[in-house]
Image (cartoon, rainbow, N blue to C red; front, side, top):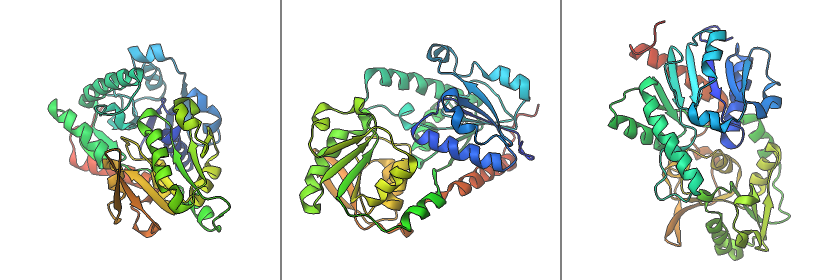
Length: 356
């Protein structure tokens, strides 16, 4: 285990998307750096067992009924085994009581804090509203709150402020895999067929609007295909039946990065994001990009001069011939360095740390 701090990470609700990327990088880094304890979903056992030199894992099944009653029903058993951790880091799961000497909540999904004017299925909306109440209530037990963008952190800061809860707030961004990105960009781009690409098919991603944007730019850019990465079950039939659309339900990380690198355009019409891994990788790899005008996208584009286009009363930023040197991006190694900086800054400035 880590010689300076005993860390307990709770990633039990993460098994795909950006959450899976973050847990993959976290378990890898800590296993190489003295280890940590991890609570993870049992569907990703094969992933974590590759990193078991110093880490120790506790597996939680998807018992949705039990989690409705208590998000952390498994915590007391784990604390009885390992003792009180120096740092309890919860990825998106409400901190229902003081668990560690320092209790850290990381915002995994901005939808848990903002649902108004966002396209969501009713079931998802209800789930997010319940989670929002639990998260806000849990801040009374939380010492540190982080999110992947200033936007998401400020959402929770405002809500917690209404309850007079105080804690330390900071941005802990997504990182990127330097080695994987370098391997891709050192290759020559392939120009067999020009295409645009988008990633994610949840309702709030507005895939139908993304397709409309594709058709707006198709002729001028000689685009022959619009590739959609994600489950077809969330995609409107009119999009599925479009002759230019190719749906890729699942893909390896390496092949996804290759697709981004060879794409003529990356398009995101999402209504809300915490801070998108896909957009970060598109900025690092793709030639051109079109992004919806939302706060987290705007943070990622603040060093760029973009043009604005409007479609169906929605604004989008366009960026051509992307200069990677303008991107505010850090490696995953730098992300973990920042985690320790946040801990040290908090410890030096706070008397809220649990003493037992």
